[in-house]
Image (tube, rainbow, N blue to C red; front, side):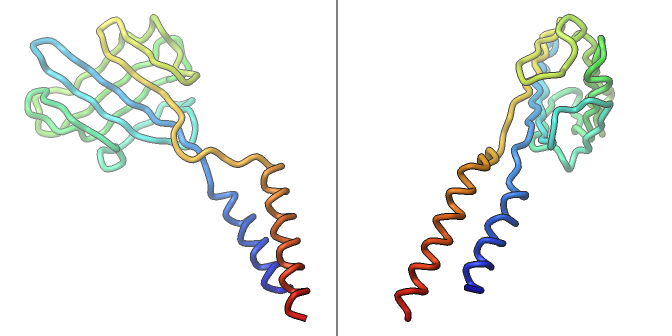
Length: 154
């Protein structure tokens, strides 16, 4: 019986750690064939100004004046004029895209294209959280299997 209870506790303890996340992907094709792209994941859609450091970026590529992307800032994502600022180390300049006002705010999953041609994709990633009724059925099945195996041993 103790083994069954431990199994059920472990089953429910693991449920809280199963989370879906939000993936932000950015692509910029600037003038003169200069390109930049980056991506990162968060627990939820960003509602406040957020800076993500270079070590937390999933991808970070640029050929803008030989720079390396050091951080990304999304300013006022729920506001009327959200801005995306890509900061560089080693290059001659940082670059910012202020052209998202036509498609603002960044408050839902989707693809946002700025007036300058930058594309921001916000999508759901990760493992979906199981439904409570499925967990209940699984738990009842585990209990019945435990009782059946205990009965066979006697």
